[in-house]
Amino acid sequence: MTELTAQRRYAEDAAVVLSGLGLPPAYGKLLGWLLVCDPPWQTSGQLAEGLGLSKGSVSTGMRLLETSGLARRVPVPGHRGHAYEVRPDAIIRIAADATKFRAFRELMERGLAVVGGEDAPGTERLRVMRDFYAFIEREVPKLVERFEAEYQGKGEGDG
Amino acid sequence: MTELTAQRRYAEDAAVVLSGLGLPPAYGKLLGWLLVCDPPWQTSGQLAEGLGLSKGSVSTGMRLLETSGLARRVPVPGHRGHAYEVRPDAIIRIAADATKFRAFRELMERGLAVVGGEDAPGTERLRVMRDFYAFIEREVPKLVERFEAEYQGKGEGDG
DNA sequence: CTCTTCGTTCAGAACTTATTGAACATTTGG
DNA sequence: CCAAATGTTCAATAAGTTCTGAACGAAGAG
Image (tube, rainbow over all chains, first blue to last red; front, side, top):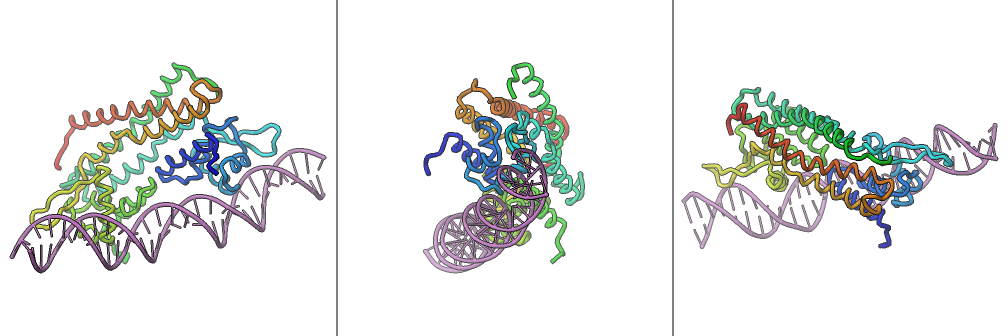
């Protein structure tokens, strides 16, 4: 029971970190495992067995990872179904998505409307936040582009 | 029962958005209310009554908002205890804290160790993520500084 | 066309987390 | 000091979420 492989332990640790963001543990376990497994692609059966999860949990969790752009399906030659792997550009896709910030900026804009508009007294807290989120929303895509550009310059390897 | 003030409705909406980040609803309600209430400072009693929360929930929730740097206590002249208000620079404090990214970068570094180091085959997924988080960790504080600089130039008002 | 394998769905069980409310502590005015 | 008001803590409860497992569906091999 305490005999877990290093990969399995890593998956559990990843689950803890991801849970901190409000994501389901199974999601974090799957992602962690897929980050360190060998080979880098795994079938549902391998994931279920390796992580001690039910087929159902793997199915649900992997769909979540797929729709959020972190994993993708890859065909497996001598195998009935498919396998999953982490997308090499996963993090870029996630980071460049400014939707999260838009939700906040809109919340602040609605707040300003509630308190009686831009020029109502005592609205600094809302204006600062609104302006900050607008700034972030604008700048984050640029930041990601800069990373990509700099990273090309260095060495992009396999995958 | 469906007769909620605009402020109260806003608090509920804020709770929905913040819940999406994995935070407790009460936390989001308190923050939303404090963003639009008049006056901008509120006692525990006012918060409890205004939001329909117990004293306990207000106490726990406000401590969380305090420790995360979003709210602070302010003295109230003709009143026994204290009141709370949103810090005008709240969002800056939160954003400039690069701790969240460090947790991820460290997770990726541990992953590289698990798979056998930097140069092991099939580790691009981990290296890209590690480098990306390191980049973000480095650049986000700069970004926040730029915002502050530009914002000074414009007009900072009350608060 | 049938059989087998693999994947998905979903109702219910198991678990986790948030909230309450009452007891306890703290502060301040008298 | 005492009394009154306010704030905090925490065990129990309520609410919500995740996970499982069995039934169902799909797709390829023979």
